[in-house]
Every structure is written in C-alpha cells, then in structure tokens.
Image (cartoon, rainbow, N blue to C red; front, side):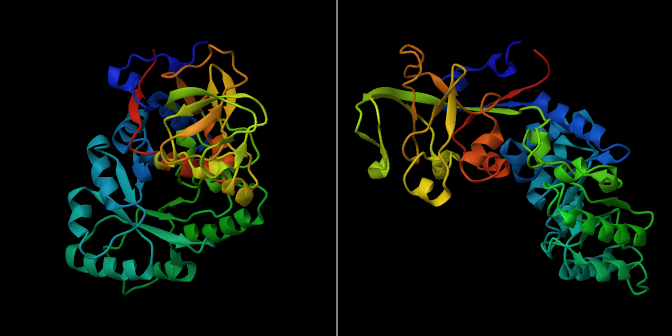
Length: 388
C-alpha cells in the first residue's frame, strides 16, 4: 500500500521548502470517530487549544466539525474567536474562564466560559445578576490542584439560595492527573470524588475524561469526553500500543552531504567524536523549529538526560543524529546508507509514519504534546483532505 503522505499534489513552494509539514486531516477526523466509538454513550468533544496542538485551528476545527464534533475546548478566548466561523453551531468552551473586560468577546462570539476559580465565580455571578442568563461550565478540582473550584464550594452552590437564578451551568467538569497510568490509584480516587460532584449537579452534563481518561473505560465517560492528543496521533496511555492514526509528517531538506574522517569531531562543543570514516547529512532543522536540543546525540544534553539522541528516516532507513542539534541545522550520520541513497536537496523524515511522534519525544526526554505544539513557523504546510 502506498503511504498516503507520499501522494502529494503540492505547489512548488511546498515541494522546495527547507522544512515541510504534511497534515492528514482525514486521519484527524478518523481519530475523532475512533474516540467517539470508545466513548460509548457519551458525546465526544474535540480539544483544539494551542492552535489545534500546533497543526492549525482553522483547518483542524473545520474538519472535526464536519466529522460531527459539536463541542470544542480551547484555552483562551482568542482561540474561540478564531474557531467560531469554522464551527458555527458548536459549543465552544474556554478553559481559562472569564475575567472583567472579556465579556463582550464571549457574548459576541457565543463562547462558553469554564469557571475555574472562586474569583471568576464571584465575577460571573455578579455579571449574570445584571445581564441575565448565559451558559457556563464549572471546573471542579478533584485532586489535580491546578484549576478548579474546591469540591465543597462547588457542591454548596447547588443549595445556595443567594446565587443568581440565572447561574445555570450546562456542564460540570474535572480533570484526571494520572489517567496516562491506568494502574494509578489516583484515577479511582478522582472518579469517586467526581461522582459526588456529578450527583450534586443532577441534570447537568458531566465530563471527566480527556484522551487518556477515555481509555480507562465507561466509568470515566459520564456525558462528555474531551479527547485532545489522541486526535493528533499521539500516545495517550503509557506502555501500550498507540491505536491512533499518524497525522503528520515533518521533513527537513538536506543542505549538504559531506565526508568526515575517523577521529574528527562534529558540531558545537566537539562533543561527538567519529569512530569511523563517515558521511554526514546536514538537515535544515534545529531547535528554532522545535527540533529540541535534547535530541542531540552527545555532549551536555546526553549528560543531563542519559538519552542517546534522535533518529530520522531516509528511504525507509533510520539514521541517527550526531553531535548537538543547533538553531537551524541538525547533522545525521548516513554512513550506513548506500552511497547514492541521499544527496543534497533530498528530504529526511523527522516525525511521521516511519518515525513516530512519541518515539522522537522520548529521545528528547519529553512528550508528544510538547513536540507537536513546538513545531516552528518555518514549516511550509500542506493539508491533505479526503481520500486520494
């Protein structure tokens, strides 16, 4: 079967770009449908914060809306404003909540604030007393100790006769701290706490599970699941095979292939010394593009992390990073490839179907979330839609 990423009818500026990123929108839609099936009776939202995890909120939001998503989560109001034209009938929840001065942005764009603190709750109730009904969500902390109303305060709201009658949340939600580790006892502890919250808000939709929580099973699904990283092909659960489709292919152009002798050193700090006569491919990618310095094969990053460095793929063969990743270039050892297998002007796959996102992330001591959201602005982008 031909790799979908190899079927490219692309403009010249993409085909000749120093860095290029292919985004398979149909794979994102398929991943959402997969998570919807795993969510059982619960509805399935789509988390598109951080510019849809770095892949473009306009294109990604539109394809998810067409796939059937009608609930979206963004981090800040500006993301909701950008998304609104591409998801016209959807509910768009803003996870950072609302502050004085943001009211008109929410009202004009039909955004739903996720009330996340006592200060926000006080402001929101005062605003509703003047304005009248408007939907909101309540975020309740069940042990994460990040955002969220304390459980006792949230539950007390249900019996608070002094609260505005117009305070009528459409969703109550919380967030799991350890869902990527199914064996963690904290998952069950938070579940039991959230069940108390959900019961107190009888008749209001409840949501606990993001991507990893959805994989924990139906007990965690409640009324609405909120997948994020799984939509973009990343691993949601540690230590298990990732069932999601690969979504991106990031490539860098080879600027030069050069010969170097055994005993010579490579890149800054002269920290990598060649043990054999070598051929080195210098690729047009560096930490300015989100290809992290900790992906280096030696030197300070290796001493700090104990990691051996990343690999790229050329012609189906993996080739290792050698020396330190620099701002704009990274060096790969292509000695083991056939002499004519790579030339200046060719491309190396950095992340993609042959070099999984989370494998690269682990080589840099991080997670797929950071790799995706850190992709730089220098990538020329191509979006694939539908079937070829």
